[in-house]
Length: 96
Image (cartoon, rainbow, N blue to C red; front, side, top):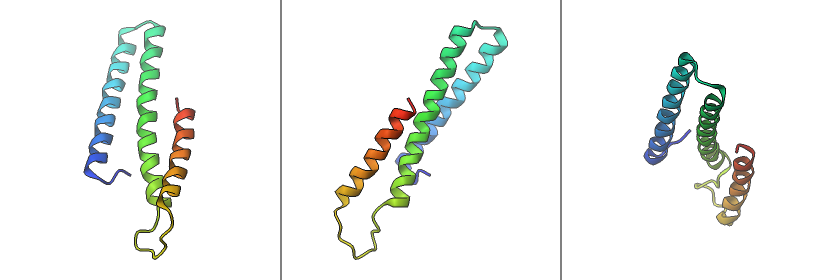
């Protein structure tokens, strides 16, 4: 779940874009649009949903597996960031 105001704003904007795409898709189906443009709209909507999933997943991974700020462990946080970024890189490729 996006917690910072900036992350929430970005998620809400994505959701509104997806909502607009879904409404446009519904209108297209009702109007009897050809399959090719309809499929193109579906792919665009799927891409927007995947983008939202990536943002929420990254936030979740950082919150769940992030370094414990209150901990006395002074481990290298850059290793943690590199590991999270590695997982996110795989997810971004998979969700394209």
